[in-house]
Image 1: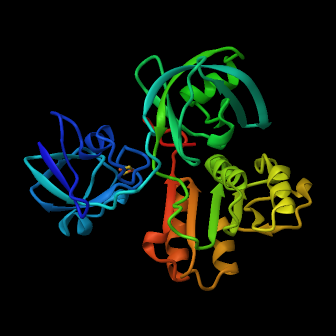
Image 2: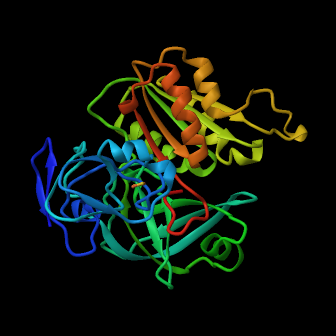
Length: 340
Ligand code: FES
């Protein structure tokens, strides 16, 4: 089916059974997306002409009122015939190609009781070009996939670093924590997603991470340090207890060494043994309390959907324009899951 994207005028065809997003990505058009699973709402676009049929999706990702107003989830929408869609394309570095590659687990490091850091080595002569903040899908033997953000910057890509949260009953994370050994072989597809710093703006940036949502944020901060940019970065990392801030010292070190980086850790349920004297509560509320006027900012958030949803209303109430909030919402145990 013929598809045209407005306002760019780019055109492409979908194959039978292919969603609008799948075809656009295959053709190299960068439309915003994260979960590819009808859960996050990132891929919302407007159907200008023609009609689509949606595959199942989560109601919170697209309300009935939005659907009635002509919006669609491009990751779940199958065109019924030729369609014209309105969607914001993202200019990204040329040459980023989504690949399926084998890799070897070269190192495993427990960062917290339930967080494992994996270092993956690609085959000789292979490099993965990606944007800091993107994710890869680990391809499991039974055809399922698990998405994890790449936690290191593209400038240091000898290995790919992942932060895996142990999900009770989780198929892949259970394997990582219970049976996986160094030198294990995996396959993945990537890079995926459009969660990366937009460089067409010099607005100050608030980076909001919850739990292992720190992984893509780490890549973004490291990339900014490597590039030597001085765009202000205000990093907020929310976690339950001190142990869950599994790279706290690293973040403290960034802020100590770089005047344009500030770091605010926020704990929601510190243990008495933590002797925590820092900020408490939810990370999005700490941001709202610190910044009464967010109209001149961009915010990049990575964490569970409930945190992202709560953040949307807090940030909007402080004047953040809707198109200045970029997020990567992920579930830990969904199938297929999104990043982190
Ligand atoms: Fe389409 Fe998440 S709902 S990418």
